Length: 95
Image (cartoon, rainbow, N blue to C red):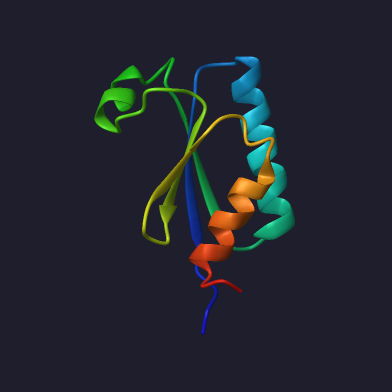
């Protein structure tokens, strides 16, 4: 069985410190845990404010785990990778 592809959408607010940290932390996590099995979309709400309303984003940074289902969200700069690791483990069926 093929490994699922993880699709992430990270909502940030410009070049704010928390936004930069979230991007760096997500990139590091994906390099370590999903080197060939991820796609990342960065949505900068300072240049695309309509996406905040359309996607119901109230805080930044917010990471939306789009695939595989069910969709989940994490708010914050992703410095606590255990949260993302637990979600990843659950989506992989506990492996």
